[in-house]
Length: 270
Image 1 (cartoon, helix red, strand yellow):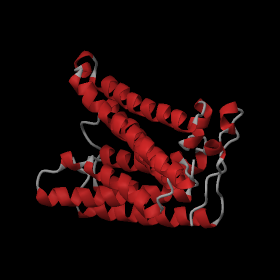
Image 2: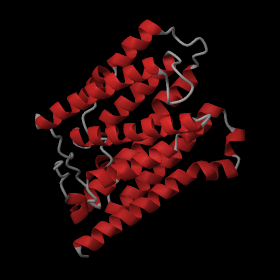
Image 3: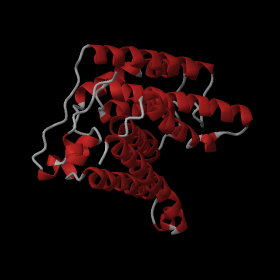
Image 4: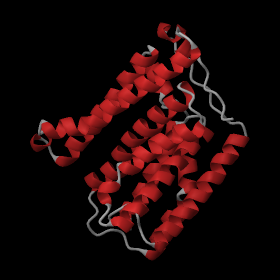
């Protein structure tokens, strides 16, 4: 297969797998599965089904075993440095909200786990670890196109929170730019899933613990803290990239890795 055809193949199959994954909630709703399960459990199982579609797609696309698929999605990257990065980057939000706002009175552990762990995990698997990475590393569309596509789709996935045109525009801008930022962090951290998941999860956590807003828009205080978090995240990610601490894929003793696509090293950012 020629290089152009192979890149097109990756782009087409990636898009198809992504469409199947994001269709899971609609199928779930049509089958009325949620009515038989507690809400948190139903949301967890639905998210698990979406991630399972991605895993199956990666395994089929690259003919990988489970460990190879985990490496392809960035799950084998070191966790501890990514967590430290996320804690440092989101510290302005934690400090600012802790000083200016009380802890939410109606904080429910199950709901908090969904918004701060499950939802960020599923979204980062779909939009960054899978869609962005396959378009950027495999289809080689270039960073900007590869980042723009998942970032736009990520933003559109949050429009339900808007109550008016102004709020709609604000949410699209904030979530779209945030999606692009997470793509950049993902690349700077050598395709580490845990860096973007940690950043996303902690931003959601501080937002919900202090009940900042019911949507992703927020007010001047919230967005000031969020802007500081973005600035620190960009600086730390860029320092990490320039320091050359890129993690190589973990060697997988799987015969399927003899396939050329699976053996290709993760390329460095231009």
